[in-house]
Image (cartoon, rainbow over all chains, first blue to last red; front, side, top):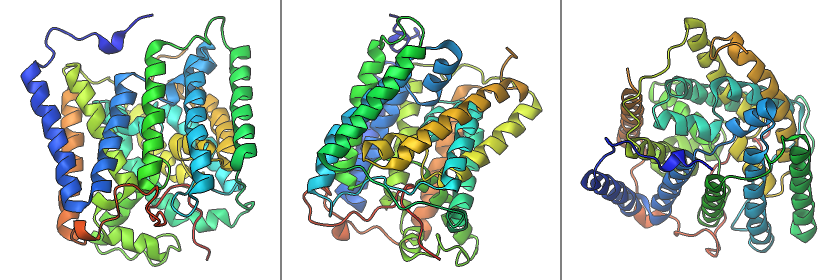
Length: 375
Length: 57
């Protein structure tokens, strides 16, 4: 087993530099806790933890799906399923006994939801980053992700703006698995998907590397902590759309034409500080955490990749699709797949199937768009 | 251009956005803030989530 995540070049920052930066981030968290409230400081710290874990252990959601399809490497997908199972085992009892304080990532299955998940799956493979992945990659110096991120946010705003129209095309009532039986069905479903992954995976690809186990432990622990503190599961894309909504209102835009953005709760969030929005804080933390790891590894001197113009145009369009489709799909890999299944929402399962199929098309599109050598 | 430049631009963008928002949004008030833990607080969660169904027309 290789351990590239822990191999540092000789030019890595020294102990003093690292100490100053770590203390600086801790002061940032404490300052936010004092200025806005302890919950908000804690959520920023949790977001940093997510960023540290994802970038530090080189774990994510897009890459493992790609490796499963291209190389029949099931290890990353299995690690994701185990992580969701751990979160579910903690979340289901909490939701059952504290339903007034804690809510799940529960959304309806619908036509637009399925289509959105499919498009999101394709787009995330083009950009090589899902919701959390785009933030982490941008934070660690990936130019493709950094370009996609603002368009991801614009798309998220637009998707939310039109969300009620899309859901009116046809949606089922929200279906939620709950209690002991719901948890048993969820774990059985995860086990079944894991079995399929092992069946189609290459020999020995079921062996999960140590760094994935460490990522699973860190992400599951942080996700459960997030649920206990925020009262809701980890999510990503609402915050991105909120940033654009705030910008639009600052420039005089009138959002009253959108049932979504005109809803009282969203009007209040647009007016309130972004430092009190749950998903925005963890999104910022993801970027900060990933940047810290990238700097810690001293990998910031590497040149960015060179791509043809059509590749950069494709990244912009895929970024818009990522944002727009994730709102129609009621979440990205985190909000729908990870947190949806982890808190018993049936839409998380449908999201997974649709996005996985979409990913196959995205993988096929990448070389055609100039984002990699043709295979 | 290096990855370091991308990180710098990204962090600058985030910091700039937070700064502008801080100047234009409702002032922070830690005395009206929710408790650290939602679990056990007796208060309903009020944060927004991407999975939340939209308001009806």
